[in-house]
Image (tube, rainbow, N blue to C red; front, side, top):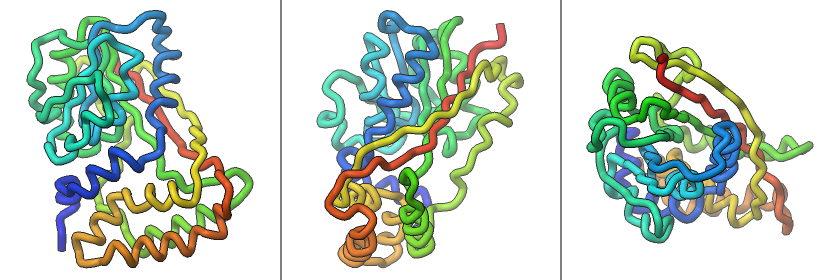
Length: 256
């Protein structure tokens, strides 16, 4: 059996994350910009655990210099196609290769779920400026439509066939930030609607880590694609539909 973390070494998954994930990050970053009341770009922003770089690219309107940090080099294979402005570094969240007080904003989109927080938070404190913000955010799978429960039922069946790798959950609001000289200064939830077609949703489903894990354990991609395409046909018909993602942003700042 393949280990859960091995899926991120996949070239296929890197391409899926770069080209087939729905554009949810820009909606969340727009809300972040509104919350921080930014009228001009910050000097520097760092995106922790950036994956293929979509979350980093979304940060570009918020800072003059944007850096994406990713521990698995394979995931950055398409970073030039994803972003022509941001800089990318292969490094770990627990060992940030930057000087003290280097960044005005740190973001982490579903990345701290995999980090050693006892080592990461001191590093975050070190590289943040005195007034800097650590914005931790994430969003759900796209499994809801407005006034239509069929996609939820489909997604339940999808995950029964192709279970997700274990160990992802992280109780963001329950973390002991004070231990590291930080505090949770704000938290908000939002709903993001992304128009998707039958084909774009099939591509999205195939880019899920649960599919990559199934492939690593012997499943055939053609079989998974065929099942997804056939079972989603009646839900999407020939039209574009708004797929709903439930998101949150946690704002973490220094205690003093």
